[in-house]
Each structure stands twice: as structure tokens, then as C-alpha cells.
Length: 257
Image 1 (cartoon, rainbow, N blue to C red):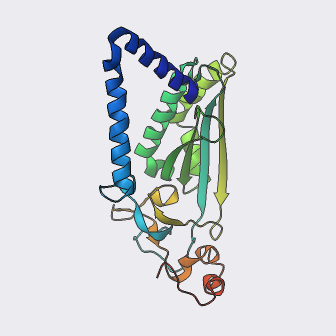
Image 2 (cartoon, rainbow, N blue to C red; image 1 turned 90 degrees about the horizontal axis):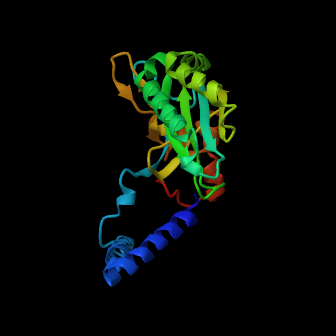
């Protein structure tokens, strides 16, 4: 069920409606297209608000986790980090209507809800959902990128009832539904070996995580990366004094200052 199939189905429905009620059947689609063209043109020309910019942080920012007191240290990437990828791909020609897809989708959603509800217990820092649109037009591969404090926290969740119910369901059906593919990747990243950078970006990935301080406050790791050690990749890993950009700019103006 590719995008082309859905478009062709819509065209067929529109044609049948035209045969049944005449030209008036063209009114809904025509009105929608005109509205979209006018609205998009106005936003592109700056004549109306662009909703796609909602939530964008107009700055260069990175991630640095504070300590239990909520204090950001002077040394970037000074904590270990665990990155966990877990995904599902459907290889059935019926796409979302294939056997088991609805169930496994529900299990995935519920696991994320349960994990986020018990983030302190398992050391979850944050998670972001993604769809893979590069390989197939059906976008039938989903991925969750999660960040944890420790590998032990990931394993604790894996052996908890929140995950085991889905794991047992999968084992009971994997032979019957070979079109369903699941996978995960786990990376333990020692301190000084990770960094992130976002420019004029929505908050996603590592900056969307959070940590809880001793006084019960939740603190974001998002920090200004337009100056200091956080200006460069090596600086954000505490591997340089962040002077690389000065050399590359050749004395020119820093666009973030």
C-alpha cells in the first residue's frame, strides 16, 4: 500500500463521486488545494505565521548533563551515556493491514509509555521516535532512539513486566508471521566520546532528554553552544580548546556571535 496506491484509490473515489453527483464532487478537493496553495504562498512570502517554525530554538545548542545539584560543569561530555535503538519493520505487501502489525504497534507504544512513566527506575534520559522514509515509500519502518544512564538500566527494563509481556507475545508469533522484523542496537559511550549539535532546530534527540536533581527538579541538558568549548566537535568532547573554528574561518566573522 504505497503512496501511489493511496493516490490512485483517491482518484478512483473522486471519479466515482463525479459520475454520481456531477461537478459538485470536485468542490471539496478544489477548495482544499486552493486553500493550501494560498496558505503556503503566504507563509513562504512572510505574510502569515509559519507553523513549521513553532518550537524552533533559533540558536546553536548542544547537550551537557548537570550533576545531581543541577550544576553544569566546565568539562563537556563528562558523563557516560548509553544509546539504545529499537525498531520494527513490516515486510508484508498489505502494509499496515498485515497480520500482527496492529498488535506490535500497540506493544511498542505501550512500552514507551511505561518506560517514560518509570524513567527514574530504569535510568531513562529521553527518547525520540522516527520513521524511515528513505528505503520505502510506505514508511513502514519505525525506530525509537532512547538514551539511558547505564546499560544496567536498559537490562532492568528488558527483564521487567513492561517489556516481558511484549517479548512473550513476539516469541509466540514470530514463526507464524515472518514478515515482521524487529531489531535493537545498544551502545555504551564512555565520557569524552559523545557530543551533539543543533542549529535553529526543534528539540529532538539528546537535547530532548532530561535528568532529575536531588531537589526533585527536572533539568534539560540543552546548553548554548555558540561560544566556549562547546563551539566545536572536539571541544564538546573535551579534546581541544575549541580553537578549530578560528583557524577555519581565517579571521572572518563567527556567524553565531
